[in-house]
Length: 95
Image (cartoon, rainbow, N blue to C red; front, side, top):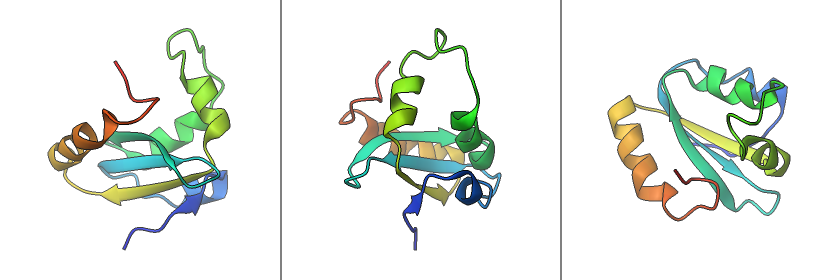
């Protein structure tokens, strides 16, 4: 069973560095972003790094709204299929 966790460095450091899908939630536990990664821990830790936000303009705004997260380890192909099914409905998932 997947558990929603507070988005804190200590919690992110417990995430396995394996492929899968992750989702971010706001304080009301509404889903705001979903993504996939080859290395889940590394990807989640990137939200704590100081970045040049010109390359990722929504990352700074999104980071301020993240309160909780979940991860699910799975084959990357399956994770990307699931991401595609969910992301079209979310404000921060656009290309």
